[in-house]
Length: 178
Picture 1: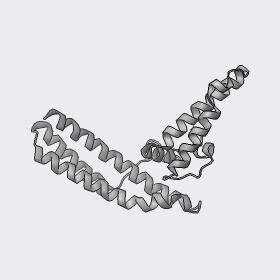
Picture 2: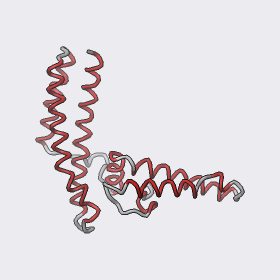
Picture 3: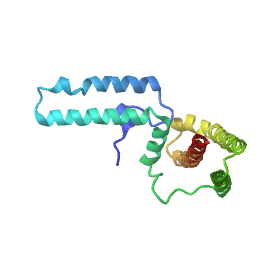
Picture 4: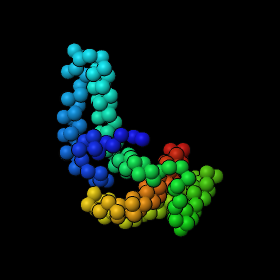
């Protein structure tokens, strides 16, 4: 299991951390665990410092990126395991429809169709973002027994966003060809 980056930084588990506190913690630990300051230490301590410096870098890289942070929190709770990722049928039907429209672009590049698909994806993404915002903002303050339900909502949001991202990537490929 991945180390607990929030514990490492002494921060509460949240989807919306205090960016300044995160950055300050990263820089403080970067100085503390800089290998140059431990060059005279015994080899075991030098190795430990190197591991802590790597942990600090990985923690900051993960927690400072909203998508990576979301995936990290969900993974920490075992919610991104293969085979446990069911999505609502209505959403899957919408995505299937968008994918069918994309396949049609494969045969005939159509700028207006690309724009229409892009607008549909944007609308879907915006609706998802608006719907999840209160859950993300309130997560850190939730009682422990209520968090699993919020995490399931976040997982559904995360998986839906990944579907939409793949559609956007396909659209970008079509746009680059035309």
